[in-house]
Length: 397
Image 1 (cartoon, rainbow, N blue to C red):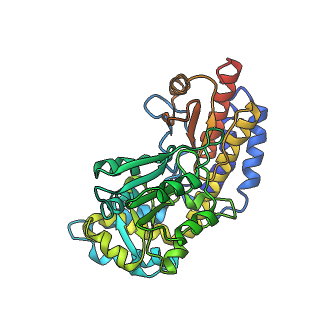
Image 2: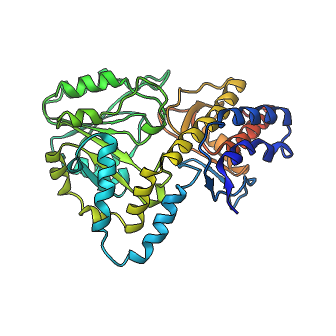
């Protein structure tokens, strides 16, 4: 039986009230959830009510996946596409390409699809790799860029982040490019992973517009749709203006909740897209019929995308309130995860959480003593906060 997502959110605390040692706190959280979800679109979903996690079905808060599941319209489209899976998906690609182009206010020949944004990273690096190329990154960022740069034999130049708040040292990255005699690839994840923070958009744009010699910028905006900071801007308008030294990477894994469908794309000038295309199969061979049609319907399902954002905001606020209550330092989150300090060793914290059937993020050196907590549903985050309160009573956090 389907239930209203709005009802699910409003009832989340009630689900746990009888199970919690702190029903008063849960009741307060329930009221906040109801208040913050009053304007959500009223559409149905097939999600089951919250279930207490078990060893066989733990809370998966370690991979930054979207816990709400795909849009129902996207699910239906994927299922209906299965009978067509004996055919190549050429006819299905143009509508999705147009939606992506319209979203970024560029032309359709500015879009190149890939099997998730990870493959887009590989494509962009492969197209610009040479024995002399350096790959410039912060020392604390998403690891696939470094992985593929190593695979192509690039020189890796890591710029230390500020250990007080793990802010990216953009000036240090600029100096690394300026001081290097050969070509450079700058890989910048904005918002960053695992810190969940953003880099100043104006400063990034200024650097790109300065067109440092022999430098290509790969800007990974996987989490951009979760950002609340009004000063944040995508770099897509730079591509629309014709800048050919910037490649924008996007994914359907996050706001669209399609991580397992493997759909991503690159936005760049038409000439750059032609250059990148050499390193990937044709769109219709890279993506499957179900994934293409699901992505198409998801992009059109604006109420779902509104819900996806709102659900994350509400669930994140529940966990942030807990961190404030426990006086645990955290970084300002602009994504679907939070990077926060924990007392003691991360390995010990992870093990204790796993014993409660809650999986949390791995270690991200050099940020020792920090945990990346992916955001679940409001139900799930209420449950996690209660477990964290139990940990506090035991002196563990």
